[in-house]
Amino acid sequence: MALLQFWFDFASTYSYPAAMRIEPLARARRVPVGWKPFLLGPIFAEQGWTDSPFNLHPAKGRYMWRDLARTCERIGLELKAPVRFPQRSVLAARVACLAEGEPWCGEYVRAVFRANFAEQRDISEEAVIGECLGRAGADPALVARAQFAENRGRLRGNTEAAQRLGIFGAPSFTVGDELFWGNDRLEEALEWAAR
Amino acid sequence: MALLQFWFDFASTYSYPAAMRIEPLARARRVPVGWKPFLLGPIFAEQGWTDSPFNLHPAKGRYMWRDLARTCERIGLELKAPVRFPQRSVLAARVACLAEGEPWCGEYVRAVFRANFAEQRDISEEAVIGECLGRAGADPALVARAQFAENRGRLRGNTEAAQRLGIFGAPSFTVGDELFWGNDRLEEALEWAAR
Image (cartoon, rainbow over all chains, first blue to last red; front, side, top):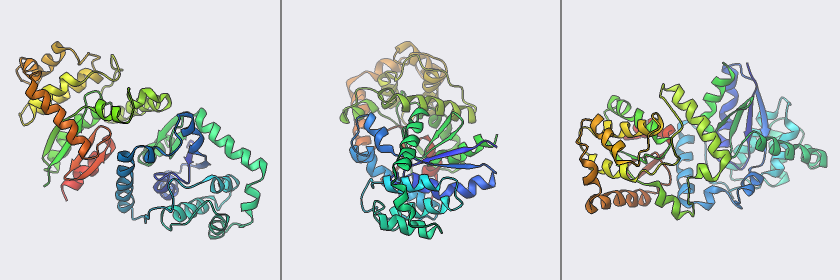
């Protein structure tokens, strides 16, 4: 089984259902998953975008919220309009860099996505991220450690690695050089890894 | 069963697998299909784009061709790089406006998509479109009639109707006001129509 890398941004709407679905689906196919937090902001900025394309293009944005609502309903996932879109996801992503390889990583990632898309919390707040760590059974004090220079470099490194892989949106999945984009491609990416 | 409107542009890459798949899937669910040719060009132009977003954003374009190849392979559909991307689809779309409601409409639409995406033909040429009409059992002389002012207005009307429905890409599917975007959403749109 090849490793499937899961590239996500906590601000990204379709990363939410992907993050909630990935672990049981991967386990059923015995595919190992690598959690790869990254930031879409610098990638969008390279294309000259200063905001989410869903805000820049209102018709696309209106459609996305409706489609996301249908998608969440189909899989029984709660969805409430976030307090801000997109949210500032850098703090949550830095903490996720510390979580890589920890047994509580998946729980933490899901707690943050729920806080953003189901609980209308502001995930740029240290207290909210500390609470998510606590829910995952991890030490809330990690919030402070996530801001150390070394760890900030890890998140930058992930974003640069995403760009090198040709990633332009989230969620994305990679198996070696093979790239899959979107919550819709999760199953196909897992099949690819299990070939 | 509600009517499912299928909005497509002959230049649109993901409209190709959608057009090839829609009839048997709709028949199995007894959902009636309306073929709605339209032009993406004016809709993209409103957003300030003078070319396909797949050309404007190279990373997205590279991904799309790879993803389309995988999609076509999965469903056993031939795919060869078109002679030009995007092709000028206005003539083919005008002829499709004449085909609406005719028993050969689906055959004609599929013949044009095959010409573009499997046979490396230039679908802006009258001879190519005439051949597609012939393959569908229709009169190749319709190519000339498609250029009459009245019929040109029909295509413009379709594009304006698409915009009013919030359509921003192709393929799209509508059931009443409910909008679905992308080849990936064909099954979900059919389920919606069959509720």
